[in-house]
Picture 1 (cartoon, rainbow, N blue to C red):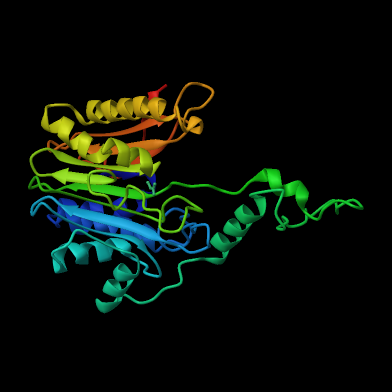
Picture 2 (cartoon, protein in one colour; picture 1 turned 180 degrees about the vertical axis):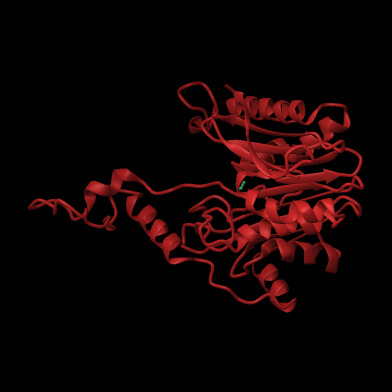
Length: 323
Ligand code: GLY
């Protein structure tokens, strides 16, 4: 099994079941659904940061290697387990992707309860973001606890520069059974404070996840637009089909993303940092059919989760493309 760092707790529960012969999709979904229900993860499901209107909109997909089938939902609201609904789309419809109100109604028709996903903590973070957006609107940040504002000072204006949390976070898990069957899933609340209706890579087969019984499995977290524009997960799997190792496949896709960002920066300069590197983050988790794996990142020091027969569930460092 391989996945984003937040998959570790779920891997501890589901890795033994995978080893005992459980279906890889059951195991991958079991891993991510733990986090969908965790109010403390700001990037997935319950407690995820909302869109700019304060509404939590979720994207999720799953792909089952043995039947080469997939299902996905996008912009779904008020449903705790979008990955389970993605599986219903795969197994109980002839479709691959259902979005918005239709996805919600579809989930409700299959018995998923209506759930408020905006936690009090996420609401407070969102309000902080709204209040920090501009000095030219009428929203003011809360007053600093101490010292009290001096006379004439705009209440709370000191705190605007502190800024809110931003996240592209997400959870991905790819699983390979002892019988050589692969499956994967990706689920997210997407980019924090996104434009309502924005869909990232997570529910897009080929971008945020892909698996193929002839080549392996891969998934992405981070800036979804980069994974979409590179067809990142598909590219990782396709490179493995052509003989690349999981590490080489992931690195090649990150190189493509870097070149694509350099081109795109001609009209969107903020995509590249002053250090000449992409200003955003993208990670790929790549799993070969022989059980080899890799976790790669554009830059920085981060971790990912892996479980294999050599070491069981653990964190490993993501390998950065740009030192
Ligand atoms: N990778 C998650 C997103 O961009 O929505």
